[in-house]
Each structure stands twice: as structure tokens, then as C-alpha cells.
Length: 221
Image (cartoon, rainbow, N blue to C red; front, side, top):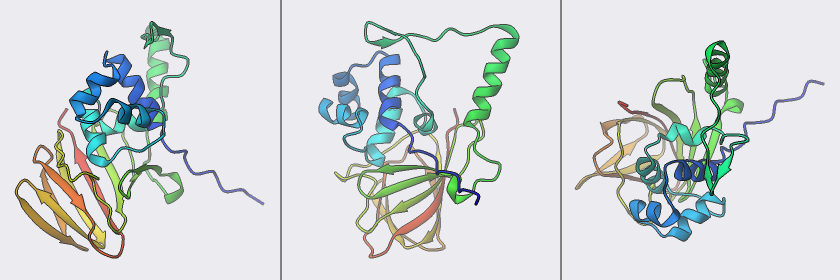
């Protein structure tokens, strides 16, 4: 009997954050100050002992200068470490470099057709789940199926988030309260929303059922 392929493993988000933090010369305290959380909280995220909220994840990636797409990628394998900091890998030249680049892009491409079993899933804090619906290498776009459990929120502390890009969302089922600056909007199934992601914002589900929608965040960089 044919066997079903195993679903993709959860992205090693903590390892990716630690790798990028070290690569950019941040220690735990300096990154924690930039994100406005404790150093122990950053450490727990990196070691997988806790999950970041949506707002914390965006704050971390903004401070590190990386995209959400970057946290889905596997950490560098076999990267040398010098004085606790990952060293830059040796880069092949000529034809070898072209082959490595092609292989890397192919490995990170998701699609063109992505079935439910092919989605990479990221479980975040506060009852939020992201499922990656596709990725084309070279484009800075987050294409996600997002689920907010009843009581779920993009921030467990009520913190508003802001990050680069433009945000587009379509709610398939349930309801969401979206805070945009000083305004609140109730978004129900069938509604769409779009705004600059630099606008302080937050999502929360005050209903009794899951809120599920497709979100598309385009980063101009």
C-alpha cells in the first residue's frame, strides 16, 4: 500500500532567530532591549521552551533586519563557530556557485501547487497558527493561512505591532477585531482588509469559533 508523505516539520524558529542574532552581533540583552522583552524570554524562544507571539516575532525580525520568510528557512548546516559567533560559510565560485544558488532556491521554493499536507506550519503564542501557502525565491512576500483560536490574539500583552510592508487579509470564517492605530474594526467572514503594516495594529478573536483567513504581506524590500 502506498504511504502518505510525512507533513513538513515545524520550522526551527528558535534556532533561526539565534543564528541571525549571532550573525548580526546581538547578544541576548541587546536584542531583548530592542524588542522590549526580557533576555530570558528571548533565550526561551531560541531554545524552544516557549513560542513568540505574532507581535514579538515581528519585533524580533524587524530588529534583526530579516523577513518572516527567513524564519521558515533551515539554519545553516555545519556552520563553523568562532568565539561563539557563526562564521561565514565558504562560498564556491564560478559554475559551482551557480549550482549552489540554484539548489538553494529550489529547496526554498514552495509551489507552484501547495496541498494541505505540503504546508509548513508555525504555532505561535496566544492561540495563533500560521500555515505557509507558498513561496517564490527572490520575492519578499508572506503568503499565509492564519488561524486565531477563540480568545487568540496577535499579542498576549495587548501590544500593538508595526513592521515593514503592506498587509492584505481576507477572512474566510469567524470574526476578528482589528485595531489600527486608535480605531477598532470588526472583520467578519467575507470581509477583506488592507493597510500599511507600519500602522500600529493588533488582531484578536473575541468569538466562540476559530477565525480563519488568508493573509498576504508584501515587503517592498
